[in-house]
Amino acid sequence: MLENNIFDYFTKLEHLFLQRNKLKYIDPEFFKKLVKLTKIDLSHNALTDIDPATFKTNTKLESLDISDNKLTIINPLTFEKLATLFRLGLSKNQLTKQTEEALVSTLQKTCNVCILELNDKKYDFATMNN
View 1 (cartoon, helix red, strand yellow):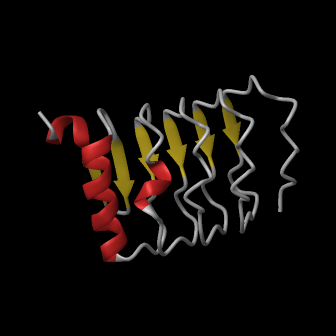
View 2 (cartoon, rainbow, N blue to C red):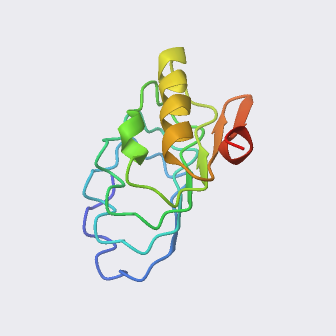
View 3 (cartoon, rainbow, N blue to C red):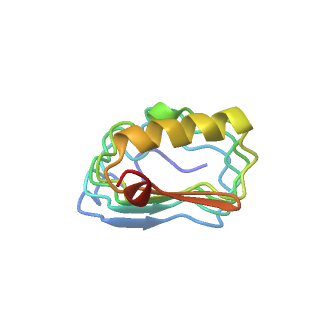
């Protein structure tokens, strides 16, 4: 588990790569002070849940990779504040069909340009909305 304040003094950090660290949990306050982040890679960990408040201060985020974890459900509101999000990677999780459908529906409405990767499917909302 990562300490919540481990990156408190890195407020100008734009890219954070935490893949392959066997992370099981990310505290919702972990990214709070990292408001300049544009890219977060949490792929290839063991995350089972992501709190909807986890990325609420990361409004500049363009790319978020949470693929290859153990997520079964993720609240679509988790990405609500991420208006600049371009790419969201969620492949190789165990998301339920209902969760996948809710994500597609919500992101299609909220993202201007957003690529969503869900297992074998890739959604390009820029193309779909034109």
